[in-house]
Amino acid sequence: MSLVKKFATVASGTLMSRALGFGREMLMAAALGTGPVADAFNAAFQFPNTFRRLFAEGAFNAAFVPLFAKEIEQHGNEGAKRFSEEVFGVLFSALLALTIAMELAMPLIVRYLVAPGFADIPGKFETTVRLATIMFPYLICMSLGAMMAGMLNSLRRYFAAAIAPAFLNIILIGVLAYAWYHGLDAHDVGFGLSWGVLAAGIVQLAIVWIAVRNAGISIGFRRPKMTPNVKRLLILALPAAITGGITQINQLIGTAIASAQNSAVSSLAYADRIYQLPLGVVGVAVAIVLLPELSRALKSGNLIEAANLQNRSVEFTLFMTLPAAAALWVMSEPIVRLVYERGAFAANHSTPIVASILAIFGLGLPAFVLIKAFTPGYFAREDTRTPMIFAAISVGVNVATALTLFPSMGAPGIAVASAVAGWVNALMLLAMLIRRGHWGRDIPLLRRIPRLVLSAVIMAVALYFAERHFATQIGPGSPLVVKATTVLALVAGGAALYFIAAFGTGGADFGMIRRNVKRGSKAPPITGQSPDP
Image 1 (cartoon, rainbow, N blue to C red):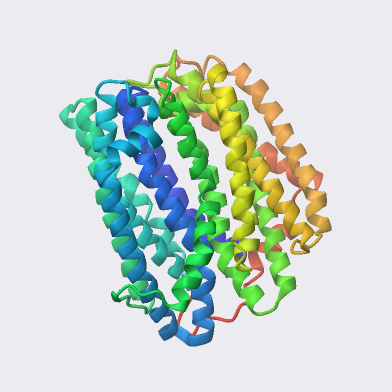
Image 2 (cartoon, helix red, strand yellow):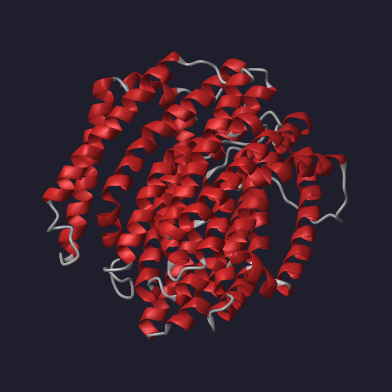
């Protein structure tokens, strides 16, 4: 299966999840707007979600996958099964202890870490504590699920792990539909969503557990023991967790700072949902597929294949994300108006703020995706320390910038800080790869980048004038059908113009597409396993 086909396999599942996420956020915006319950829910959910990214997805996609792949190559499925059970025993025990401790300390955590700005608002602080208490066990399910997803990715079975997150959105959409049908108030909706998050975690864990069993590996529980393999995993996982979850760390910091202003937390969350669509579809797909593929190439000593994988991944991410970034910058307000502006979501207050945040996130989008393309170059070589240092620097940049801009700009200042930190991190990662000789000079890629940027600029200029021309059709008073048709037509027209410009200027060519689609992986197949259909 070619690299692009593997990207597409993961991206299709992620796209389904993100599309359902749009539906969820549209219903949530209509039900809760940017009011106090929306702030409380988003702040409470951000906490376990950040831990999930830190100790689950970031750590295990970075540390577990190369070690698991090594066990398969050296000791076959039995060695991989033994290693998985050793990790499972330690991980489950640690997560259980962490969850109990966090549940007992939740009031202090919300007051001093998650949302210090809520502490003096009657009812809002208590609601946030209760919602966070309900949702935090979600961490156990998602962390164990992330481990099993890493196993599936190493076995080249990508789809089950990619589709599982969609069930969070399916369940929450069901909760919101039930709340709308029965006319529940905002308080009851918030608690229903929290219980839905916990139920979704159980369902997602069940999906990947069944997929792992179908892949031929049955995981049993072993008494927690610090074996050499587990020690090696922990040494790699701690810095990898920080690095892999850098975006979430910055978001958690942003949430804590934003809690000092009413509606800021929910405004950031609504904008985040929209830009997560291209970030998830392209960035997550690249990160998930590239790490095991790069690990195999390096383990087999195929440095040419490793360099080609890295360059083609960057080529693919820029080709797909530059137009998305330009569109979010230019068309943020029409997009927000179409997606959210109904019910409790106020047109005169909520839309301009969320749109300005989304436009700024758009400028950071290429950096967020490039980070996911660059970090596997370190993780596949079992170097998790260097990206952790860069992540720490970017966190410092984020905090300093956010604290500087928030008093004057409000929530958009936090978005600026996040985008700046993302670019700082991406550039440091690239510079070190080049310095170490781990990034081969690729002349075709260097020629295409400025042409792709030019194509995105041409598209942005055209969208700007088109948006002004159709201002009435996409304005607040326009019927939903007219608004949706016009926005979708503008997006489709902009995409068509971008692709014409990209191919016309030489930023892309059919030979590039054909090579990436047809080029199969040179790694040997895993004994007894077959790739995803």
